[in-house]
Length: 477
Image 1 (cartoon, one colour):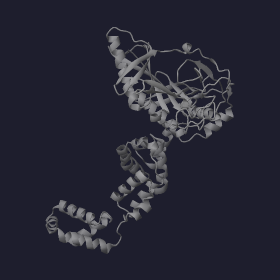
Image 2 (cartoon, helix red, strand yellow; image 1 turned 180 degrees about the horizontal axis):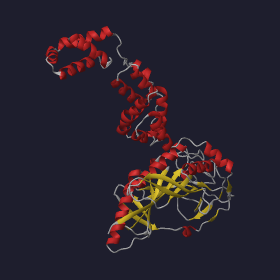
Image 3 (cartoon, one colour; image 1 turned 60 degrees about the vertical axis):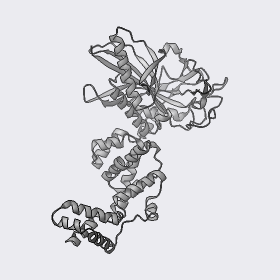
Image 4 (cartoon, rainbow, N blue to C red; image 1 turned 45 degrees about the horizontal axis):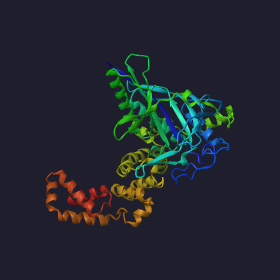
């Protein structure tokens, strides 16, 4: 029997606000444990939350970017449960009137080809919980409440995803849109973007969904892909063995490539939701929503289309440059300096990405001046430095954030512009390699390439290759 995978994702993103959703505590990542905490986010009796208006603005901005309807009259609800990393034993969230509903994201259809829309059921605002730290040496568990109250958006999709590849592409699209909107840094390694993955399977041709399971807090694209594939296969094997799939929450272990049951899966009624009594409803005006819409930044798909239409880039190059806000920002800056979109794209997608891969650096962690790459490209275009020298300068820029022109001057990397000096060195090379000269005169082209290489080595790569080639041919005759 053939089975179809059915997947829906609940993606949580921490918002890039300076303070928490209901208090003035810092949202900065890291810090000593339990130092970004106050009476409100630690749930002390008698304290009252106050909504951070920036969180509401970011939620509306996200909803508009994801083609959602904005709920003009929305409110918070209290989700009651006890987790040791949530000190007040309930979470302020939105159930009945979430701020955004009925959106969509377009992805590639991995089953039927073409494009498809993954529908977004809702986006709601809520507060994050703290973090448990398990100490194996003392066999104890510590709790850090710094993350309590950090503002979250939960983006809940419909079960429209049919494969692991589609799940990854959907989250990649979400991540890019959130980054370009400026609402989240989406640093998955720091937990500011993570996904709960819901998976079920059903016989091909059936219209009745199977029993779903949920895997919580997965924070890498690879882990999302592996989790969807492995869980679908686990459920298929259970059904084929005559067993039933149990609705439950599972923990995904990407290192071992398997998941483990944690608890039976809760439904909404298990949380005993009721309207949050300490927060009034939020009423959004048409003017407020229109103002946010008018100020939306250029989104990834729009930027990609502009790169192709205005700059003549290929779809592939434009897609890569728009896959991360850091790449797009660097490309835009570099094009302004060089006026050469193709050179700018070539350097970013070639030498820069190699440096990122070699050093295992994420694009958002690049820490050099945005203008430096364009300055390097202009130095090459102006015959101030060679291409090989430019690579060395880029490495120094990447590692130490040097100023390209200053670094070139300090390390005597400028091109030799004195034709007489270049000619003298070429003559020395010709005199030192009579055999290669004769072989070239006899028609052996490789010997000329050898002589050219010897000249460039003697000149330490600091002469224009075209000038060296010209002089070499003149001298050999």
